[in-house]
Length: 104
Image (cartoon, rainbow, N blue to C red; front, top):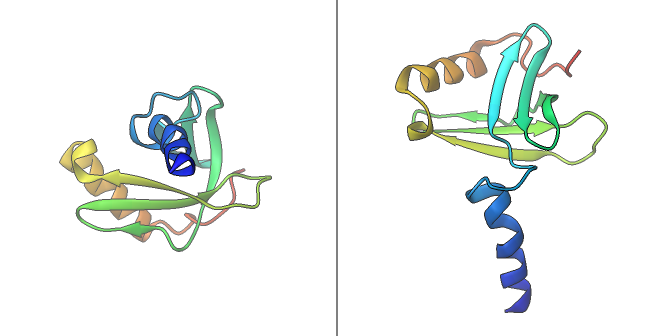
């Protein structure tokens, strides 16, 4: 029970409430590739993984930070963005030719 509470204390501010400095709060795509934003690291490049999933209700981004071996996930529900913005994200993930490249 103590381990479960400790895990909840670690996960809630970082992945649910987004109040921790390392919480991912922004996503953008430019000519250099995909970037995520957190207060701790600012905008930093990431490499999207081929198992990322773009569905009408949710987008699950699987990404790897250069220099790290582990793959992380980010869930973007439809109601977290405007309908048009979420649709453009899904289209870009499905049809972008350079989406799996490492950041430049």
